[in-house]
Image (cartoon, rainbow, N blue to C red; front, side, top):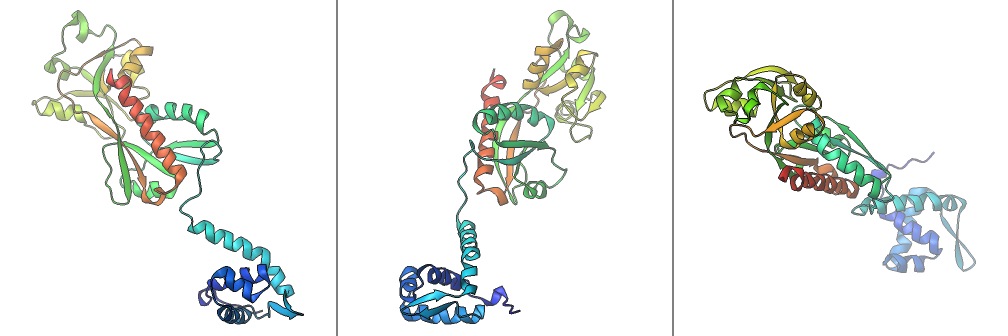
Length: 312
């Protein structure tokens, strides 16, 4: 069986072959592809060498494809369509009809802020898109974001490198305690020293001790006792509602806890820095229209957080 290595073939020959098979005329195929008749005649000769077949034979005044050539018509059309698709900048994306899966990699705080808004939006705008959530591995985000169409939502800007990023909402902190907590009895302001002397709950997604509150206290020469440390915000409200521990959490979550649990929300007695959630994605998916839609939707969901409850 005759074998020809692809690297040794001028793929423009296949464009010429398509024109020849469609027109069954060297003159017409030349006009269709913008070359001279003599150039198309030479191209037909090269095609015959590549395929080891006459491809087009003369019958009367016209050319008729051989059986081998007839068998090439359909696969050649498929190949050309695929090549043209590769060269297009990107297929059009219509969220109303799109069917695909997209991923958001984020800690539970960001997931709780973004997902309710995104799911509501998908129901109305993109019912065929499925969202999957997960956590970013520690360390370099780039490999995880390159693996599949995904965005990350994380506190602080990621290292740029292969990643692109946009800033989302900026969040401040509040202190939560159970209703009737003895430290808040009498309605007086909580002092920094009294705050440091309380038993604290620390939400540490990384699992490591320490955080912004410890650094802020350290600048004043104070320390606190962290009596309990958990990785997620999800159970923080219930722990605080059922104990004398206090916790410093994003203010938007503090208000959510207070709306459903016997919890009071007070301002921190010392300055605790705000933080910004960033949306990041890999360069690999920057020109993907569906991925671009997801990025805009995530940023807009974070902007709603910034402009809504957090601003009040």
